[in-house]
Length: 66
Image 1 (cartoon, helix red, strand yellow):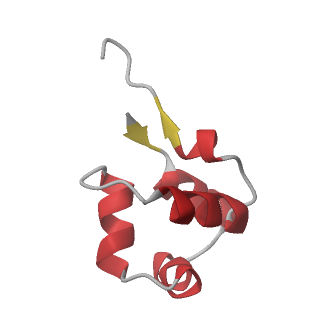
Image 2 (tube, one colour; image 1 turned 90 degrees about the vertical axis):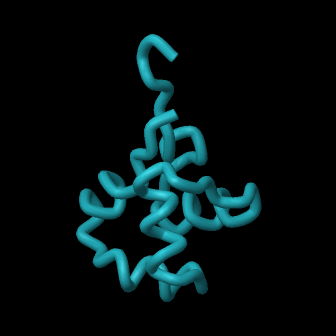
């Protein structure tokens, strides 16, 4: 799956540091979610989607051919 978290954050005009603070996570954790090195636990995925005013499904997209 390809993360769309960074794109959504940018489209909302938020700074990644601000989002990390609001989510009560480190900037490194958020960076890992954005790059796909890690995935948020389900509870944080729902909180992030709520904060970004989107659905959890919107946070990721299936990569073609995978």
